[in-house]
Length: 109
Image 1 (tube, rainbow, N blue to C red):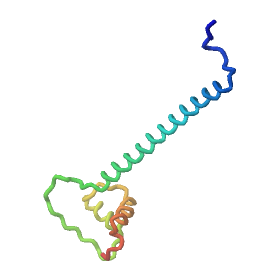
Image 2: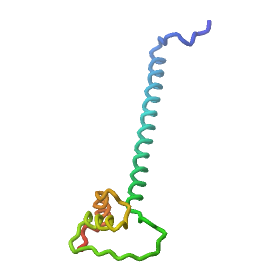
Image 3: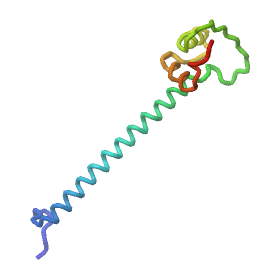
Image 4: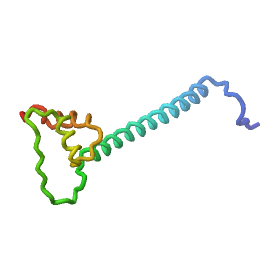
């Protein structure tokens, strides 16, 4: 007499093993999804910041002088550069964290 595959498992150890397999599968799927979401968010952030701080025309050899008033903030400098169309950054709030990261915020302008 062969066991039928659709019979209910009555052995407590077999039930525990089956439950453990299900739990492991759920945990692995959840962790995999979280890793993919976090990785995607990090990549999106990286490329967003790279595009925001990159020059408008990277192949241009033209030297441009921009006058920055004394005491200008990072946001003020960003606005000047954006008005003169020297940067693609349309979200000026990104300039403050970048300037602090590179320790430009302690510079006296």
